[in-house]
Image 1 (cartoon, rainbow over the protein chains, first blue to last red):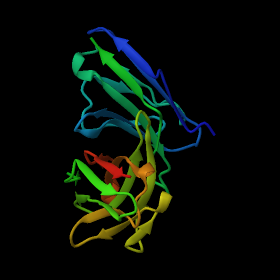
Image 2: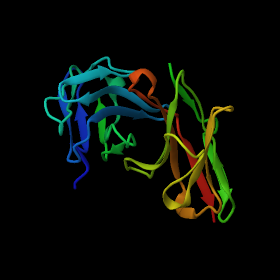
Image 3: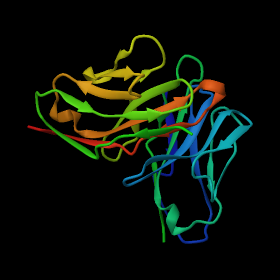
Length: 113
Length: 115
């Protein structure tokens, strides 16, 4: 199993540009989520999904969109990048029944200039 | 709303000494509690969880944690610290009651084990 994979590992964007961060898992997990990690603020939930076709907002959803057309994939779209979105982004997945612990991807370091 | 507090930004402990990393939580229903560890430039790794049952849970790498409902705490402990335990530790909570599905993380505690 590859676990949770994220691409790209690093990205630099200019203000106003859009892009999609990719996330995939091969563990057939129902639950997937996106977090951003900023110094001193821990991990903050952006969006999450409890299954294909079902998504919901987390703590800091503004400026981000998600969709979940398959169990495996959960891409995060930045609509119009802003310097405030400079951060490290982590995708995670978990099994909903009997599990709940999350498996994290390696992260994407995004810089917006 | 649910929340997690990790009151210490950093904990320093000598190698071989016991360590404790503190976590308190607030939920309206029944908590599912987790500890994760993050090494530099890596994603988070799961250490242990409390779902139900015995209040003392054991996890990876010799870590354990005790669920205390009256004090709403879930402190991480290890009897004898190793230099390789130096990392960033996160506590997380999920309130399953009523189907609540969001996971909330604390701000993290940096553990420094001194040789």
